[in-house]
Length: 359
Image 1 (cartoon, rainbow, N blue to C red):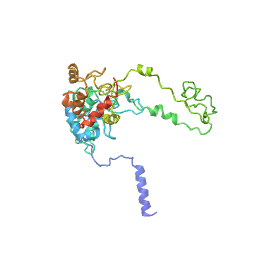
Image 2: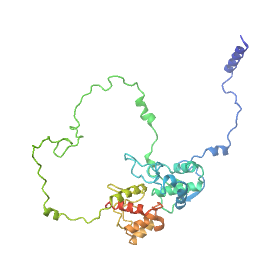
Image 3: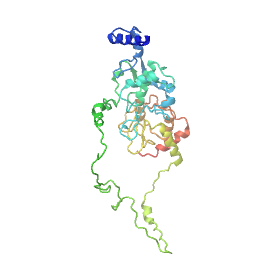
Image 4: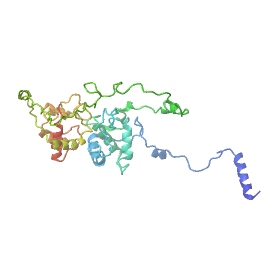
């Protein structure tokens, strides 16, 4: 036997005779408590892991404008493909739900932890604990979950419950679904005999014209004889025309309305318009032009807005223009966190667009 084979045989025999891991390898040492703490930085839903600190809504507004608004917009509405953080309430059952902190996220701890560890993009971990508290407070306010004088801290953190906390449940697919796909697959004659029993029209899933025929059924084609000329339709009676009441609403410039619809994209994260619109972070704006301030049913207005409403404020074109240019300057303490529209043509356009929605 060669020397190398003898060495290999001795090694195998020694290995077989020695209990596996009977001796410590002798590398490294137990981690110190401070070393474990340096890695254990997660924040749990009950607030475990939060550092000392606090932050208020107004400070959060300023920090958000400096560090977050370039991606998420001045009032968390999202810019381009960057996520929207506010609004989206009651949209989770829609074909395209808007998943925000106020509509989808289950725990506030995830919001604070993500901001503190991962934001802003490209400069992660530059946000101090106090700034993280303030930004989180501002996001809560932008979603209509707290008032404008709210201060978030480690002490009251666990008191905040996000609306969709109950919308999540443990992942039970391993027990409920996986067994359904673990058996032998059927490879032949799996569906049995198939036959057509009814047509779609019999099942009432095909739209019909008023005369009972399937939608789109055309009448028989008839050709006019040569020389035949269709008789012109009779002019409506002058008396009928006189009976129709004249509508005295001035039509808005279509181009201006179209431009306003584009500008309104900056507002729709918080405000809704049109049929079926509901209050969200902000009130619905149907019929807002010329309407008394603070008059939307079911919406909780800020104290300054309530005071303005009691003082007789009406949203005329001029009042809306001033408010939209600088909401906080026009009404100190307003819940509307939007910084304002800086171009007069954008203000005129969005007011014209809002004017197309009745109350």
